[in-house]
Length: 369
Image 1 (spheres, rainbow, N blue to C red):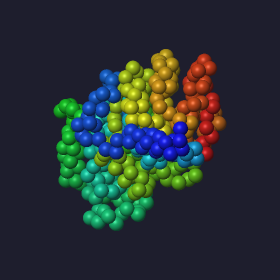
Image 2 (image 1 turned 45 degrees about the vertical axis):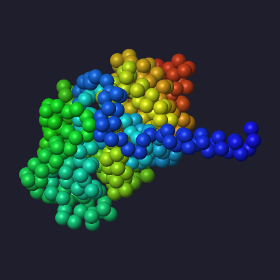
Image 3 (image 1 turned 30 degrees about the horizontal axis):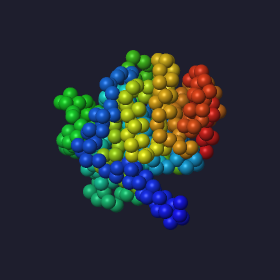
Image 4 (image 1 turned 135 degrees about the horizontal axis):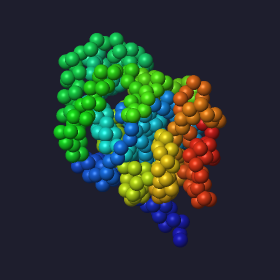
């Protein structure tokens, strides 16, 4: 083939690949249809999951940056700890998968907070039902501890709280997803809980003893990566604005699904393949522990194998040692964040698979930094 035709072919192939990547924006109708297309029937889990209990969650960001995990698509489970990984990775599209439909509703609630909030302090004011400062534009450069301090010291404001709840309720019904009166009541319950508990909110479990060592929401937001840098999505205005932009463009897509189920993960994989997009990171928290218990881990592994990925694609895990030694544990932390490449994970699966959850959280891991 003549060199000119070779170059033309390469240019056209590159242009085709770029045009086929994840969309830069979804309409409300497209967003709602995509959520419906990807979702399965909901299931049950024995925590409210309004906030995480993974105090080490930001430690993973050091490894993500060290190993060049960037762009692509992000997949994750649970509530807003995903936003901090999204801020670090800067994906083109994100999917938040959870077996509980309530998590989808919580994601809609966060979306309803992102849209009207011009900056971090306005977002936090809506979150906790407090009055924002008069001149919020001047707060962009202030550190997160200052913002949380202001909102903690601000007295309860029933007018501001009622306004925040009304605003969220009105917006949550307009995102292209069918929500019932019961769904809106659930969203309002989430909001009332954040307003009542404020930054001292902790994860609540059902049918299990409360753990006094679970972190507060304040601590989660003020946590650091392994270099000592505050790294939550609210630590810097630029990170907040990136997540807000992705949410406003309907590119943080909540999905109801079991990670080992027949529909959600597989359908996300097909969607990404259609758009020639690859997974940059898949945050599974400690869900794999429950998949081992339920003997569905092999099905999950097959779902992972079907996701488009490359040599930089990673799985982010949380492990709770509960007193057992782990080589990557950081003293003083309840949980440990672990990174493993898709390639390493799938190589073990092809060779016979992980024999136990304990092997999964100790074998072929990336160094944390």
